[in-house]
Amino acid sequence: MRFMVMVKANADTEAGTLPTREQLAEMGAFNEELVKAGVMLAGEGLQDSSKGARVRFGEGRSTTVVDGPFAEAKELIAGFWLWQVSSREEAIEWVRRAPFLPGDEIEIRQVFEAEDFGEEFTPELREQEERLREQVAGQQH
Image (cartoon, rainbow, N blue to C red; front, side):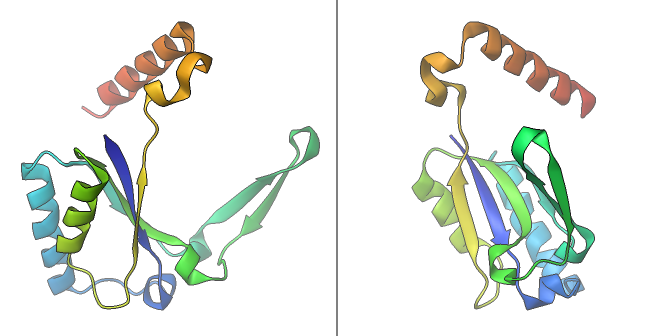
């Protein structure tokens, strides 16, 4: 099963403070463990919310764009991983090994799989999804 592991933002990440060389090296070593274990499918850090935007949908498909920065840094995401693990508990164990500082917070959320959608996810929709996934994978090589 796949899990999205989200690193919550804090005052430093929202201020655009970059990690130190030592912190980058620690995270690189942790990421190397994840890759060697076959756990890590993807992962990236995100820049602070002042460089982002939120798009809200209204009636009739109208949209409103709100530029960052956004309040409540603790509710924002500063980075993420996508992991393939056998259970939520395994994801939690990996997070416990990650080189974060006191006060940092990580959120773990299971990713939907095709089976989770039941009959609403018709064979045609499944075929489309599989075709798109293959296309995306092909673009990454």
